[in-house]
Structure formats: structure tokens, C-alpha cells
Image 1 (spheres, rainbow, N blue to C red):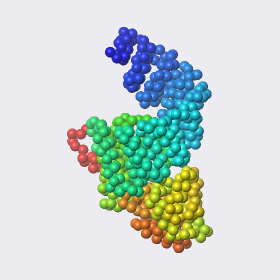
Image 2 (cartoon, rainbow, N blue to C red):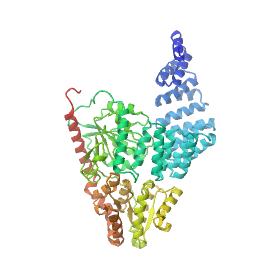
Image 3 (cartoon, one colour):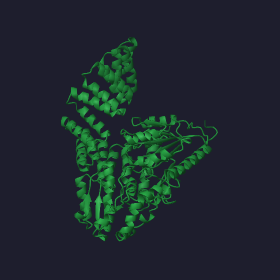
Image 4 (cartoon, one colour):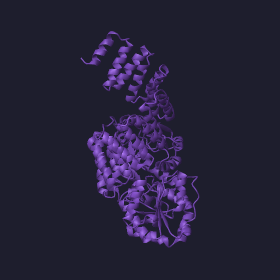
Length: 638
């Protein structure tokens, strides 16, 4: 007879033994029977409610059970009974942090440190709160304090690395992640974090190797597999067929391992009723996705459609508040596991469910794999297939996916809209400046793309442009990391471009970043992963982007935005055309200046960029999809 059975027999003889119920609860916790333990804790606390250690143990168990509100309730009692217990304040902080109450959590951790300044866990958790609040520099300080208390803690090195990475200190983050791996070489998660920063540095082959090592160490690490696909989409050495095959392999693996939620969808098959649209994203904040989805939600006919948002994020800001006001229902879901989230979506009777993340950070593709909604769509957040056959459609238009070009690269059916993209420009952006070349006497090219897009092929192409125009200069923005700058200088030098022709600036606040366009005449696009938000910001500031379109969706993003704005002559089909176009504008500065001066008005009035046009096409497509689903329902289904 095991200890659980013995404890249960003792309680049968004495069912009012509060301490006996607490012992049974603790035994269940040790065996990871967290829900059973919670029931036992509740019984113990009903019988005897004045022992703070039992409240604290109940809180810790509820945390493990992911019952975060209950954890907070237990921890509040523990703090009231033992206000001098740093552990009680820590437990309450953990619960409040999990519930998204970052400021309240921070106060709890500070209270714990006031009682025990050497509590490493409190310093570490303060770092997490600060990082979730988008304060990476402050988080770095907290994590370093924690490391002073526990210098051999591999997890702390990983946490520090994440904060350094968020602050743009990629080289320092690389050192921190490697230290974590030295301390715990078999931890798959640490190899995954190392891969992230290698990808940030544009070292795709090394990053892919680290992702694969994480997958070897933990074959069920779906997150590493998903991260690897995002990395592969940037790899200039990978063919479109290889990228598509890797995504399909992910889909087969996930769908084979995902238990289907039983019973058919109970959604009422009325073709013309108001539909419930569900949106899952971790990026409903100051993020590129918000620029694209906000004007759609604003223009959506609310007599036809409801908006239910499943926000899978810890960071909330004023953009989140605006988006929440546009929704009919806003549900934080970061704390829900995939099966629970899928069950909630099904219970919410979502008719059409949107994935806005793809294989980017914070995605919930495993919830989609349960097929919680009758119709599932991927859009906006990721320019590639998810690889999942349970996602029915990918929304596109002819500009990003010319008919017949990309079909074989997607498991989803490509659903065509008249126009597939609008963009919410920054209303208080600086005014457009005069063309810099008119004063300088030479062109200044620029790039504000993520530095990890600047691979060997991109630098080689840009160098050909600069070699063809010896007086031209190049400004590269968003590069905080000094070793990364030096690596780029060396890469340009290998193509004959001297360092004095290059200028760098760090990542800036939005207004300062937009004002940086005053220094740039033409933006040069990266490949094979082109621009989305960056090209739109450039257009708003009067600066067009020169892009080289290719045979994949990542290499057609900029082309699509430019085409919708009527700038098809900035879309090149070959490297020779790219260089020739740059040289053309070097000798036509008055025309470039005129284009710059009128570009903001041009994109404001471009029909294919109007939210009303994009949303009307979307609504028509959604209604057609719904009609198709209703027709496919069999009479035996409820």
C-alpha cells in the first residue's frame, strides 16, 4: 500500500483531521496530482484556516496546477496570516504576474526583498516583470543581481540573455546563452534560446544547427521546430521547395500527435446569420501586426460579424487598449494550455478562427491543430504556410501571390481578395522632408529592416548598387550591437565598399525612427525576406523602397505593398534591373523629389490600400467560405 492509500485510510477513520488532509494534499503535489491536491487543500483549510504554511502550500500547488486566480486567493491568506514571510509575498507575486497584473506582482516581489534581500527568486521574477513590461535594461539589472546570488544558475544566464537580446545586445546575449549551455548542456530550451540570438545575428546555418540540437534533445519540443521554420524562411540557401517541405513535416508531426476534440462543431449552419470571428495573436500591442489588423477591425461591418479576441500576450499598452475597444470580447489566454484554449474556442462557438502569428513568437498553432472552429484561416503575421492541413485558408491577393505561383508552397488553400493589405500609418508622424540628395549632391540609400535580414546575398546586391554609384552612401538603422556593426562593415568591405560610405544608427523610438527617413533618398530592400511594416513606414515618410521580387511570399511582401500603392516601377525582377533602377533615379533627382513630396497623399488615396476596400473583399470572402461550410454539413450533424 502506497503513502496515498495510507493517508486516505487514516482520513476515512478521522475525516475532520485538517492536518491529515494537508498531508494528503502534499503527497498528491509530490506525485504531480495537482488537481487532487487542490481538493485536499480546500478540505484542510475549511477545517482549520489559521495555519499560514498550509495556505502557502496550497498556493504553490495551485500555481503548479495553473490555477492562477486560486493561487492568488490562497497567497493573500498566507500574507495576511504571516506578513513577515517573504515566501508568501513571492507566491502572491507569482500569481499576480501570471494573471497579467505586472505592477501588483512587482510590489509583491519588492515586499519579499524588503524581508529577505538575498531572495534570488524575487530578483529573478522582478526581471521577468520588467521584461514583460518592455523594460529590458531594468530587467538586465535585476537578473544580474540574481546571478550575484546564484552564479551557477543556468536558468538565470538564460533569462539575462533574453533581456540582453531584447535590448539589442546580441553579442552579449550570445555569451550569456552559451554560459547557460555550459552549465546545462542537455537543456533543449537553452539551445533554442541560443538559436534565437544566432538568428538575430544573421548566422542562419548556426541557428538552424542549434534548433535541430534542441529538437534532438527534446523530440517533442514543438516550439523549437516552429522557431526553426521561421529561421529557415530567412535562409538564402534554402530553396522554396525545401522550405515548403519542412513546414509540411511540422504539420504532419503536430497533427499526428494532437488528439482531436470529439463531436462535430455545433455551430448553427445558417448561411446569412451574424458570424463570430475569433482572432488569436500575441502581437496585439505596439507591433507590426497591429498596424495591419486595426484598420480592418475598424471597418468591419459589426451587423454581420463579431470580433472575439484571444490575446496570447503578457505585454499590454495603449495599442492593446485601442484594439480591445474594437473587440466584442477580449480574452487573455497566455496562461491556457493548447487543449484548454481549443476547448474554450469551441465552447465560444467561434465560426471562423484567424491565426495572426504563423510560426512567429507566441503562436498557438497547437490549439488550431485541435480544429476548434469550423473554418480556420492564416493571415498577416507570417508570410509562409503553417504546414497544418487543419487551417483551411490563407488570405492573399494577386500582388503577393500571383495566381499559380505559390500554391504548391502552402497546405492552406489560397483565398484571393481584391486587395489583401491596408496599413494604419502613424498619425503624428513627422512631415516629409526635402529630398536629401538635392543638398548632398549624391544619393543616400537606407535600410531600416531587421539586421538579421541582412545576409550575404543582400549585402552583395547592395554593394553592386554602391559600386555602380561611387558617390552614394548607405545608412543602416536599428543596429545597437557594435560587433554586429563591425561584421557588416567587413561584409561590405569584402565587396569593395569602404567603411566611410556607411553610417549606422541604433534602434530608436518610433518618432525618431520615422524622422530618420529625412536622411534617406531611397530604401533598399533585403532578400529573401523582404519588408512589411518597414516599407509602409517608408512610403508614409515619402521614401520608396527598391525591391527584388522572387518566387516565395517572403520575397514578395514589399512588391505587394508597392503594387497596391501604384509603385510597380520600384519592383524589380532581376539583380540587373535592381541596379539599373537605382542608377536611373541617381540621374533623375527632380522626379524623385516630386515623388517624395506627393507620396503620402498618393498612398492615402490609393484605392487598393483603403481599409474599406480591403475589408469589403474580406467580408465577401468570409461569407462565401461560410456558405460553403453550411452546404457541406450533413443532415445527421446537430
